[in-house]
Length: 434
Ligand code: PA5
Image (cartoon, rainbow, N blue to C red):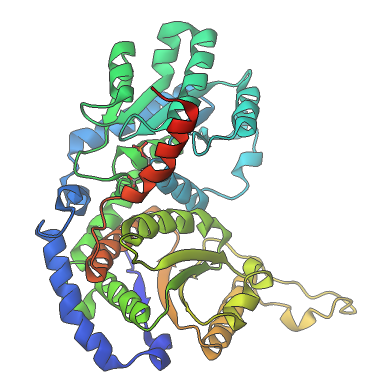
């Protein structure tokens, strides 16, 4: 497997190498605290060793359950919010062919995965129920706490639909719950109803759970190679133990904090493959919830290029200079299209004849990098060799470990999310929750 590369060499106009050398021991110290369980929130660092600790039995159970659901249903509805769905959505957007959803159910080799409980829209959920009429579907309800309102409400409606259609026993065969090992309303309900269950480990928080059953089960149902994904994560775990100079995650964490100290308070993840849109959403949740607290943090934003060069490009080039960019580039995208020569050159594009779209995209990326750098926006690069399960596993782990280190460098507990409670308190009061 080729390794991803973190490259800060295109941002050297914006920091001094001595600053990076000074930050290196702090990053190594933070990594040591993180991995030895001494930092704040250390009771939620089970994800660090999870790729090497997941036992074979758990993997086999996930794969067997996925096979069962694949046989039973044309559609799997994943019910969950935040860390309980974003990783799966990111993986599917990156790894499934973009237009697979156009295929009729009969010609698909894997069930179509759709999502519910990711918000509280009545329109979305009513339309979803309508769309599921007459379709064979199964449900994977995922909630670590087992008490989150959004998935609980959606699951209530879907469960009822399954029970009315297939009876209690038929519904039981089509519902799998992924939740806490002992507590929460979902665990209780799963026990009462006899659903197959998977556990979100106690020491793994929602936004760090993509490589547990939370992400692995629905990905396996979709036909992704979850073993290759875990192997990629294992490889990145090894690299994350190397000294600073060879450790991409530590370098990324260090560079973010160097830029923050220079007033670059907003990081924009940019990418040139539309399939990365939900990876960016997953990353925003990971970094936003982990770092945005105690009046601190880097605001994580994202922009998909070249699309957003026609919307956000103006601001990035020319607006307030509190930005830095981390660009996700793919060395070898999975497919390509060659631009053909057209007689008479009516659209003036013959100068591109024989070139591929990926080449044009790469030139757009280089041109943008030069322009944004000249405009005062430092550009960090993450070079992904290819888009595969193994690379994504490595990338998930890279972002997670860098997030833990970066949070400790920032001086926050990266593993809690006290601010999320504020809206819930008000909402429950307004709803008259007993
Ligand atoms: O990272 C987190 O802990 C959160 O974003 C959760 O993933 C999200 O709130 C969903 O929680 P739960 O899985 O308990 O329903």
